[in-house]
Length: 435
Ligand code: SF4
Image 1 (tube, helix red, strand yellow):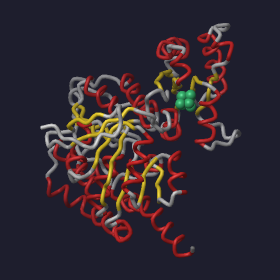
Image 2 (cartoon, protein in one colour):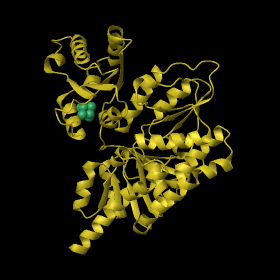
Image 3 (cartoon, protein in one colour):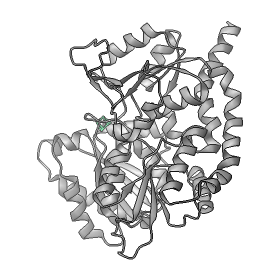
Image 4 (spheres, helix red, strand yellow):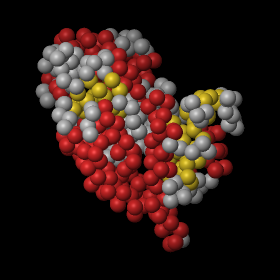
């Protein structure tokens, strides 16, 4: 059976998402998202001995400078090597220039252990081969300093794909596990240190000791990978990384994502089941966290219950956030947009949503704005470029990018996650009272 949704664009196509026939509206038109360079903002804070050198234009430099809000005297761990007109005109050898910049940078910053060359739209358009440049620079500066490359270009990508491309490049650098290695776990996806520490404590209580997080805090702590390695995604957008780990022989543990009490419990239960941890022990260990999460979310339920939410495609977290809003806070979900729908990773999130929810992949932004206006939601979750115009029209909005910058995974962040959605509604209610 082919499910049919109203198709409102010449570029749109409807296809089945899963065995239940949940339809997906696919659109390929103008889309409004940040590019993959944006991910450097959280990645450079996470991996504390890495330096990200963007090979790009002045536009790339301005994006990073304003998005990261870094003071020029702060010695940040990212910079832009600007491709100038002489490079574009072929009057200079760009590889020679890049080698010179890298040599000066490494001499001035001995703390850099991993140098990451980040490709951009301009470097891709002129077909500058950064992986090959990284191999050459590794030869010059290794083995103490590693050089690697990935693409953060905005051509047909969204900002969370920057993290995915970076982690996939790290997988290529990970050593092979020894044949006699014990079973191990890798948690894939950037998590705030505080969240990582909470999960570590829970894993220890489960009796799991060989657990690594990707990205690691130090470039020297990349875990080994092999057939006895299991991995679980903590971020739904790390799809290329998952494929790279599968190719290295690792086994994927599939679960809903650890947002809210229910999501976190399902995620931890899946890990425990894989490693044969007794369920009654798991229940006892997670009981206090579950109770704390429920209590913390309770104060926002009154604000959020019954509210109608429309999610534009931006961070790729949208299906998981929609499940959290619907299942744990009683919201009505109107549309869940996502730049890319990785069905195998979010199948359980989609299954938890009612069949009335419209699921869309990709974007034709004007058409989607029209759908949002027609639906008249109480809250619109969208990128920064759309939020202000919607606010002017009287809608409450939430910036999608905040869900990537804010610690939201795990029991002790469930209340904070609920608050992120409740805050704009509370603010608008106050404004209406005062007006
Ligand atoms: S990578 Fe592309 S989209 Fe991103 S700032 Fe540079 S030019 Fe713009």
